[in-house]
Picture 1 (tube, chains in turn cyan, orange):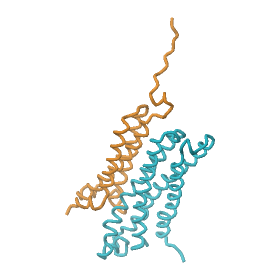
Picture 2: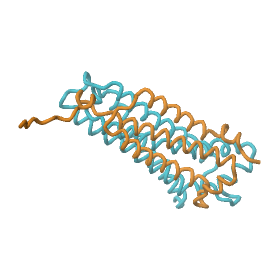
Picture 3: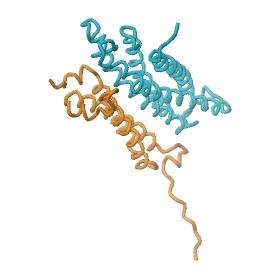
Picture 4: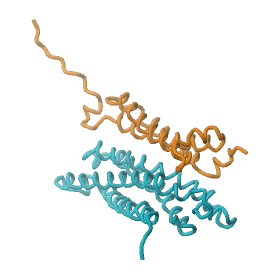
Length: 170
Length: 122
């Protein structure tokens, strides 16, 4: 039982960095939602803010790492012109060709919106700092970018998993 | 002779102890500009083989290499420029938020296969 170099990179791209991304999103979302004056003690605000910064920046960095490894390492193997590449296998069968023409085409582009949106959310947390607890409009802004960053990555991740199931990169 | 010192005028944000929103709006709008660049280049590359070939900075990655490099440059460059312009000011919040939402919606549209494939050159 062993993984090839390509399978290892696919695992790093989709599962390992993806796990950090998901954990950071879950923690960040819970932290942001409850980061309000009425729910946090004055002493707890600074500790919570530190965790919030770590969570949002972890998600942003994980998003950048995912799209960079995906585009520059895994994707070239996927799109090789050989008849055994994942793309060739999908396109060869009318029943699976939409996984490429729709699924992969959407995934490879929309994924790049995620790090931009997640970085904005992380920047806003640092910029607003403790004032987030009393500034509802700022909290909603951060949450919007944070969730949008996750949603775009979720679309890409879902298609990535389904495409890999239909034609894994080997 | 008077030695009276003149305090610099505080902005509304400084007076209210809240950070100025210029840098926040700059970051948001930059995401919209980066996203729009990606959507626009994705659609243009589908419509023109010349643009598709130009965007192929790396043969193994294909035109996606150029699209994403330009989008990331547009994102960080516009963020820097807008931050410099709005560093101490608070531009119209609602207008910038609406512009950002519109740009991001266009970004999603431009990267949606059913949309950009409709422009495919034969």
